[in-house]
Amino acid sequence: MSYIEVEPVKGSFDEVIGEIASDKSISHRCAIFSLLSDNPSFIKNYLQAEDTLNSLNISKLLGCRIENDGKNVTIIPPKELKEPPHILDCGNSGTAIRLFMGFLASQEGFFVLHGDEYLARRPMKRVANPLRSIGAKIDGREDGELAPISIRGAKLDGFKYESAISSAQVKSALILAGLNAKTTSFYKEFELSRDHSERMLKGMGADISNEDGYIKINPLTKPLKPLEITVPSDPSSGFFFAVLAAITPDSKVIIKDTTLNPTRVEAYKVLKNMGVYVEFVEKENVYEPIGDIVIKHCELNGVTVSENISWLIDELPALSIAMALAKGKSVVKNAEELRVKESDRISSVVESLKKCEVQVEEKEDGYEIVGGELNYAVIDSHGDHRIAMSFLVAGSRCGMRVEDTECINTSFPNFTKILNRFCGVKNGD
Ligand code: S3P
Image (cartoon, rainbow, N blue to C red; front, side, top):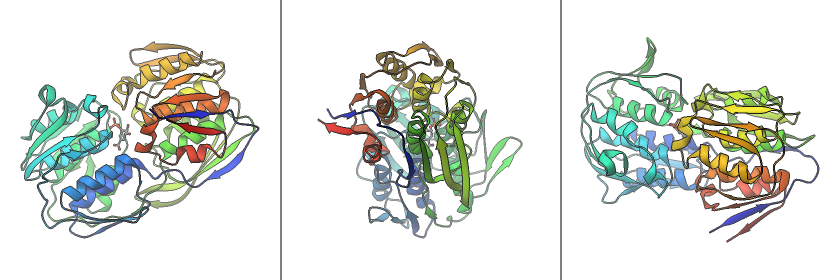
């Protein structure tokens, strides 16, 4: 099993980081939404990581021709979707399996979606059940809760659905089903989740609007315009280096060319509430606002996080490192969704912080951390890329060994190379 050892940072730094991995959510959507057009989509800076390469491969098995030069991708959609002779492998990605479920449930054909051992433990009824209620034929282990998921696609009914969870994956799956439904559909969530799907699909010409608190989805009457997009840097990946600067005295980083979509930069705002200097510099707007984020170390104070949890779901593990070094108590609540991510992130964070001798208490819906110091420990990533990278950043403070680190390749293959600009990093098997 691979591991990474990190040594503490020596001194301070002032760095511009221009090579943060491209946005994972947007890249997945490029691979999937290209299938809704009848013309080639051109995608610059497509994320070349395991999760998003799996999505490209699925689009290929569904009949797309893919040209990938290792940075830019052209997706040439088929005239008609192909019924693939293979299982569609989503690897570690909840986004891929759930969005493809929504898309394929409303397409003619038989499809089987599967993933790795971690994905095979994650709940799928949150997508399968609303799709079944409009006629989708979906099955899987435990009555459709667990992958492998089989789909016998067919034209579905329109829907009016209020989701009890705020999840961009559930929302996007339902929007994709609605685009190929018999009648107009309506979707509501209790708190806005990340909204890349709405923005991108509208940009491609889909008739999606807001009406009385619902997203109104009119079925497509013709193929959409293709995508022409430069994928920005992923703010969730950049956030590891934001925390690195926030916890290192006299240090500063600039994260370049990232999406500044408000549903994606909430964690930076929490850092700001903790006392860190954070500045957003918007430079352009293509589907979304895009620009740089400046982060400078300041003394950290404890914070309570209880709202907009879906905007923080990927960053809470890294935020917990800042909380562990802040003055006073920090509280994370209403965050039970953390339990069904790539790992149970509440128990992974609590277990790992305890190993670092941090005072932390686990709650059903979050945790409470009393800030102090972090100490060297040997951490198990639980196969969760965000846990692995968060505790490697903690290692910049006190040294750390993180085990089971292959998962970093699912979202941020050049993470350790960038981290190595700041502190000693050693890879081992
Ligand atoms: C994602 C949505 C989020 C996030 C995931 C990516 C997406 O999950 O955790 O990494 O691309 O739609 P939820 O659907 O649970 O919000």
